[in-house]
Image (cartoon, rainbow, N blue to C red):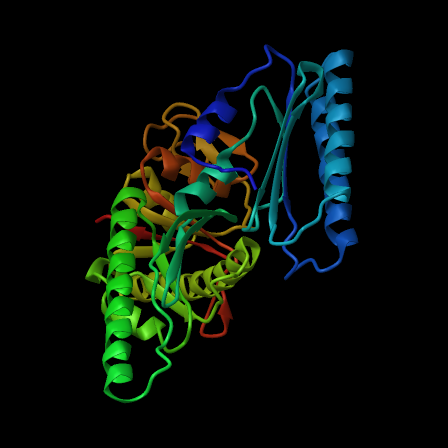
Length: 377
């Protein structure tokens, strides 16, 4: 998977083909909801039809329209050849006439979108990058250690740590006991070196969550020697052999990530609902959330990633609304927007607010398919 960060997205968003249209397609390929390939391929075909329809509605010249048609052919070929694995979301950007193509796959679902414009449409990826968290896996045994950093479905093995620990002594009696204590001292020294190296790595690269892996009897001893900064980030403990492949470590990391994400979403939904019900620093529903967003009071915007709704935007000051004849702020005229949720996400990112796009979105057995916000004040 491509390394997606803010620099990549800035470069992608600013790419222009001097008037040649750029086709952007987002597709949810999450196997939990779409186990059959034909399910998401059928939706990809419909999205490509939407791209061609948009280009016709924009009254493009013949060459520009044919460029979009070629975009859709290449996009469908990519989707049909896709080997999903851990992939749950796909973003494709193409401008055939300008020779431009970017494919981005991510381990989180993305909302289905099809946009023809002068630049790549990167807003869903921006929202994803803002909320994505990193996972460090530290695999340790009595002699070695391996450190991995996983983010956005990609994993890097950062370094190897090796200490030569002697084998057990064959002689019995006092000599064996003394030698065994020597071995245990070496193991303890090794674990301390690993803990120190992990702390240095955290200070240099930082990560959100920590997974400890190794022999079941050794992991608790290693954990006891970790700095509090690291202990607070532990989200899982698992058994893995030192010879585990990078792919196996990534598989374990993604499984932990999914569990952590589900729990984080559950707590976030409960927090928004509880705070809103108590009349404190949270609101739910389109009109209260958009009002808070227009006033710059939103600290965290919370939406389900499939949520869509038409709305309005003031042509003068940019105020968002669900309905109305004129702007409640400046009295200016309101223009229609196809999806006010998308406009709200864009406004939140522009204001420096955090955006949480929920994929699992359930709490206490109740599903969440609405918009909410935690407020700054």
